[in-house]
Each structure stands twice: as C-alpha cells, then as structure tokens.
Length: 304
Length: 263
Ligand SMILES: Nc1ncnc2c1ncn2[C@@H]1O[C@H](COP(=O)(O)OP(=O)(O)OP(=O)(O)O)[C@@H](O)[C@H]1O
Ligand SMILES: Nc1ncnc2c1ncn2[C@@H]1O[C@H](COP(=O)(O)OP(=O)(O)OP(=O)(O)O)[C@@H](O)[C@H]1O
Ligand code: SF4
Ligand SMILES: [Mg+2]
Ligand SMILES: [Mg+2]
Image (cartoon, rainbow over all chains, first blue to last red):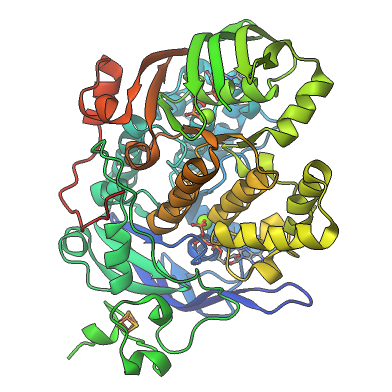
C-alpha cells in the first residue's frame, strides 16, 4: 500500500523583492507502508523543503501530496494538525526541534499523548535510543549535539507515526552510533507498518537501511531504484559523481573528487537538463530539452 | 602557529567533563579528532576559545605562540579569538546571527580585525562565499541565514570563521550537513589553506573517511580523555586502542569505489 505519494510537486520560497526560489521543481516520489526510502542529493537541492511540504509546513505551488490517502493541503493551523497526526518529522537541526525551556521527558510525553499511549514512559524511549533514563529530567541545553539528536528521535517515535520523516536525523552521532540508531529507526518504523523517508548525506548508512533510494538534484528526483541496484550500477551521471565522492577510511590521504562547475542557483536553473553544465557526458539534446521521465531522468537512459 | 593543549581538565557543575586532554595542532597540519558522542570534543574546542559555560572550572594549559590562553585576561583573549583563532561550531545556529545578513556577518569581522574598507570587505566576502560553494554570491550576501539550507548555513559559518584569516581553525563537525561532492570541495579548501597559508586545523569529525582524506594526525577521545594519537595512516590502519578498533569495525562495508585522485 502506498503511504506517501508526491506527484509533480513544486514548492517555492518567496522573499519580497527577490527572485522566486523554486526549491522543489516538479518532484515525484512514493513511500509504501513498511518501506524505507533514502532521499539523497546535493546540499541545497530541496530535500528539507520537500520534507517540510509533506508535513504541511510549506504550501505546494503545484502538484499534489497525499499521506495515507489524504491530501496534504497547505498551512492553516487546523489542516496542518490533521496532516501531522500521521506524519512525524525529525528536523535537520536538533537544536531547533526541541523546546529549550521544557524538560526532555515532558517533550517526549507530548508524543506519547498523540499516540494515546498510556503504558510507555518517556524514559523507556530514551533507553531505546541509547540514552540514560534520568535524562528525562534535564533540559536540552545540557546535552551534546549527538545526545540532542537522539532525544529528537525518541520524541518522534513516541507519537507512533504512520509516516516518519528523518531529515539528517543521525548527522551528529558518532560513526558507531549512526548505524545503530539508523537501524533502530528502520526497525521501529517497519515493525509498526509505518513508512520511513530517510534524508541523509551519509550514503553508507542509507545503503544499510533503505529499500529504495531517490537521488535529488536541483529540485528534481533524477534517479530512483532499489538501493542495491543503484549502488551496483548508478545510471545518472550525478548519481555516479555522488557515489564516487564518498571518502574511504583507508588512511591514505586521498581527497575525494568534487563535481566540476558551480553549484547551481535554484532561482536561476540551467536550461534543458539541469545537470548539463556539470555533466561529463553532456550532448546537444541536453542543452534545451529537459529529460522529464523516470526512473533515470537522463537522455542517455530514456525508456524505450 | 602551533596550538598545544596539555593536561586540560574541565568541570561543568559537578561533572568532570575533560580529565586531562593532551593535543597538539601544528601549523600547516590538520589534526583530526574523533570519539564517542559526549566524550568532550566540543568542550575541548570551547575551552580553547574561552567559551565554556559559566561556572566551568579548568586546569592545565592551552598554549598558542608562547601564551597560555587559559591564563589570559578575557579582553586579551577576545582579541586572540577574533584574529588568530576561529571556530566553526557544531550547531551553525551558534555561528550565525539570525537577524543579520550574511554579507554583514562576513564583513564586520573583517573590517574590525583586518582593517579593510567597506568595498574591499565586500569583495572578499563574495570570494569567500564562492570558495565555500554558495551559488550566486552577489545575491547571497543580502540574504538572512534562515533563507539557506542546512548545509548552506554550515558553509556560510565556515566562510565567517575564515573571514579574518585565522592562524588556527577549530572546525567542529564542519561537513556533517554536506553531501559528499560539496564536502569534497570543503575538504580541498581546508587542505589548501593548510598547505598554502600554514593554517592549523583541529577538525572534529566522526566520519573516518573524512579523517582519512584530510587529517595528518588523528586523535580519538573517550570519556574526557584522548585514548589514542598518531599519524593518520597508523591510527586508521593499525589502531592501538580497543575503542578506535571498535569505531573502524562498526563502519558499514563498502565495496563500491569509483577511481579517486591521489593527493
Ligand atoms: N552546558 C553543559 N552543561 C552540562 N553538561 C554539559 C554541557 N555541555 C556539555 N556537557 C556534557 O559534557 C560532555 C561532553 O560534551 P561534548 O559536547 O563535548 O561532547 P562531544 O564529544 O562533542 O559529543 P558529540 O559528538 O555528541 O557532539 C557530555 O556528557 C555533555 O552532556
Ligand atoms: N526560507 C527560505 N527563503 C528563501 N530560500 C530558501 C528558504 N529556505 C530554503 N531556501 C532555498 O531553497 C533551496 C533548497 O533548500 P533546502 O533546505 O530544501 O535544501 P536541502 O536539500 O535540504 O539542503 P541541505 O542538504 O543543505 O540541508 C536552497 O537554495 C535554499 O537557499
Ligand atoms: S541528460 Fe545529458 S546533461 Fe543531463 S545528465 Fe544526462 S547526459 Fe548529462
Ligand atoms: Mg536540508
Ligand atoms: Mg560535539
């Protein structure tokens, strides 16, 4: 069953007196119940904007989002609440997603109330994400970056969401904890039949927990596929560049390769294929015709 | 300039957070610092900058060019902090003021510490934003931090830290919010500043791949102590301490490697 459907979504940021920033520029994506989808892509390509739109925190300028069959309409506090009951998000900035003036336990208890859970204690959830039970009595500023991130995850899990969105939920954890916490998010989501949209720059962890992977570049999904397949045989030139830039801990001091050319501005995207100014395989057709198809949005991989 | 931390102890309230940390960051070198969450990496950086929370107690020495930063009067330390040492904070919100445009945040430090004029400061700001791979620097300077993505804010914080041409940079997880291709650009930038200008970098990172790419020396912390220090190659391939070994073993396997350029 498809839990989340995003169809040709456009999300824009408007600032008076400035050019419009089309952060999400026609993206389509699905997450099924019990499925983990990893969303990866260049910094600034629109991942957080897309995630926030799914939670009803940004209006869609065009296209549709449905969660559990219900359309997510834009803001308006009440509709936002309705949309939020099924979806929980761990925000990219763990400092911003916790209230500095309330004890950690009380913030987790809010989530438990949402799920109508009267048997679990906030401390139980802290324990599950690998934190001491007595942290519940303390305030967010007393914790390290990684500890805060675990608290944010515990709070999101407490609400037993049908769709869990993690926006860089493990970025502040150390390497040994990352894989562990990511697996935990996967297990808790999948066991309860929820879907997980996992946004991360940590490709090794995405590879570990995602069933499918979606690669985003400048507001569009440019490649999707089962994780193992994309890993073994990345097709889009951007995906290839991305997987090729993963630094390897072999102790040899090898600097990974950067993408050539400037990072593009979503307020002024290139014509044709958005990747063309940086693509090593660019062809004439790429300059003025946008490849608007999937699963690989590249003229070299046009479906027959 | 070389930064030498010896026997550094820090207590916050009742808790003893650092229990005698020794670390040396040499000019032109990147010293990578890894370790368990909560082991005291950030607190070590904050101690160097004199930014520990009120009521913290310290012991030991933090030496920079023959001066002990721990013993320095606040006013003098302020001057050192602006001009000689800069920090990229783990939380970009700490590095950036939410109500001030990116351009002003970059230039006010420069004008204050380097004494450059308005126009030159702006030119330098544009150059720095381009160096940290921010698109369209000419429009970016007039925007506020919240109008950028998480990773862009992190890169802006790096630009702000570099604005006054510090001799020592403490970078606390500076690439966690970046994808690997943009990260590659930032690592090349930092490496270049070390090689060309003799910048000394203390790079806190939990990413051992990042460590392997740029660090010259690597230290590993656990429970408020440095448990292992050594050259990059040795620590990452023949770790001596059990915790370092555990860190390396916990890495998800990776057999997909596209060719990479040798440094
Ligand atoms: N303001 C504070 N008050 C009380 N305890 C603190 C404070 N700041 C940090 N600590 C404690 O000091 C210890 C070290 O924290 P620090 O932030 O240095 O960890 P870290 O190694 O940077 O971890 P991470 O990798 O998670 O960022 C932690 O146990 C933390 O709870
Ligand atoms: N409030 C805003 N006003 C104007 N532009 C914005 C705003 N928020 C984000 N943007 C722009 O929208 C684009 C996408 O930002 P978004 O935060 O979605 O990226 P991201 O993929 O999550 O990046 P990262 O990996 O760095 O977190 C960026 O160019 C950013 O500058
Ligand atoms: S469509 Fe053309 S420019 Fe775009 S990724 Fe494919 S080959 Fe490269
Ligand atoms: Mg983001
Ligand atoms: Mg830290």
